[in-house]
Length: 609
Ligand code: G6P
Image (cartoon, rainbow, N blue to C red; front, side, top):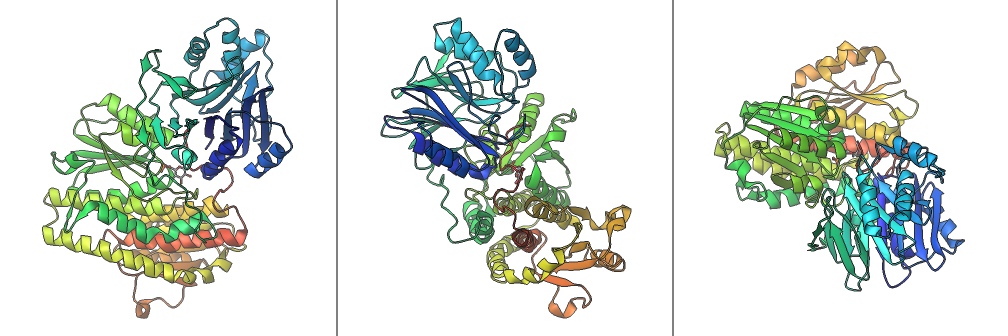
């Protein structure tokens, strides 16, 4: 989703702006632009499409300056063209914006009557126009900036330049994340993503809701929503905040798939003490009385990991576990009740709907605990929750989530085991067996990756098809949803995941020889029933790919292809089954020539609802 950078230094900042925008490319975008404030005033250069187009145009421009702002745009209001790209300018003011201004139509109508001209279809363009209007009636630029913010409804992270004050970089945050950065040379930065500041800032500070301000000559003025000054609290830039490149892999997604054994190792190192589980940033989870109900809220791939965890938790804890997508939960007036534990699950920790679901939960039942399981310890979800279990997946750059999904499954399985043991529903030897199996899973995943070529023989089955169907049962039903999501995200093929037992209630009508059906059939989860479903689709001419941990001697001999996985236990089987599904999606996408790491229209971190 959109990326923001602002920079102020004692040198031309164009290189810094471009390097930060490049770091944020992974978020997904469709146009980009920068604006610098130099001797000739504000100069903006924008381009539709990839950053390379912007770089080309910049080479032919005289844009320069010691202060500047930049943006990668993921279109919400108006198509992705140069006019709608940010920054937006009006009468000496330039703005880049993430989020959505909900009262933009009303503001635009009023400003138009007052003589302002609008050029784009964006909601953002009202912001510099409003600011320009307020500046004409006030000498106090900070008061004008604050007044402008108070007139905006909706969500925003903003960076701005005002020509009347050529050495200041302005910023504000409400509803969309924004952080400040500085380095030893006195350079100052504003960014929507810590990754953007890798290599630029030594120290960072996350703005809280409603905070705003400006920086000038190394001096930061920061205010709360009411305009009261607040003091800056800087933290050292986390060392892991860097995109270390593709390391010889063809895509980040491929690299991240191959990082998964190391991710699982890091998770076990972080949370296992010989034969027990400890959660250093959420110790209360294993000390306080068990909740009577658990609600897990997430979006996208994270939602699929949550669905698998429901099977694990309910089986042992005997408490009701509700799983919902955040965008539905937050608007359906959920009945929360006391002694309910909320778990938000997220790679980024910034997904707008998940964050709002957490806020709704805390507002409605402040006594209930809220835990987040997420990959970014400094994220808004982590900061606003009562406890954090970090995923330790490392920065995930490929838009299609792979290693963060595996990390979510691994962490959720450990949490399920720890809670089951604490509830007395799992004895210590059984817990230890499951933990030992988690350790074995690291090598099993490595073996699966070493035999990645097994999926290649299935790729031709996807060359002229009208879609694909993924079937599974129990904890592997959500895996069918995830396998289908992965395929559609990066190959643009329609794919559906279905509970194998539900297949007869609709999708069976789609089955013909042009619909590959991927049947996930490990021995752990109702194997016989899944194999019956396999027969049903096969009888109707489907080309079946069977994913199973059966011994070779037990393989059915009449399916089109078999993806073999090692045998896991009740908890680790989905981690193993995920690997061939990721590889399949990746290889099918390669065969179709799509943009694997930045698939069309998708964003890595969805910071608008
Ligand atoms: C976007 C990403 C998905 C991700 C989802 C939820 O749609 O493209 O990969 O699963 O957001 O994001 P989160 O950061 O909350 O896990």
